[in-house]
Image 1 (cartoon, rainbow, N blue to C red):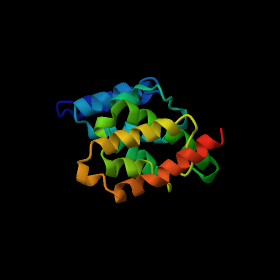
Image 2 (image 1 turned 90 degrees about the horizontal axis):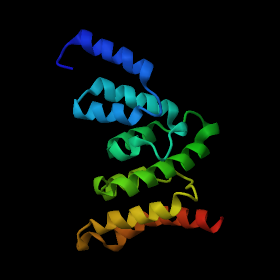
Image 3 (image 1 turned 45 degrees about the vertical axis):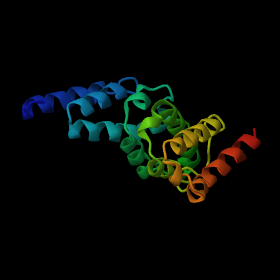
Length: 168
């Protein structure tokens, strides 16, 4: 905001009052456009605090970068009692993100986003989509990189997805 501290302070005060699950995508988008780290931190904190309420239809899925999802997964659930819900919800969010923006995902990032340590359970609504995204990520690799070890890295996710699908 043109390196004007007073203006930035006023903007942040307004954002604190206005930010919601409906506006979070727009604030993220503007923080990216204006390279505003303070706003980006505020958006990330809001998402961390409200991640279980974010809809899979949210604009944030269509406008965000993988780094935001990595940050949210790194933070993890607020407590042990929400860990399963966090895992299931994040599987749906990552599946939708991958379907909408697979071109932004590389194999390494996708593997971190779907790691069993942070996402031990996969929602039945996300299972097929996650496998589709895994296939799309694999398609971006050069033929030499599609070796067995790469497929083995994805096997754990595929196993969790198949297990979930077989239970429903």
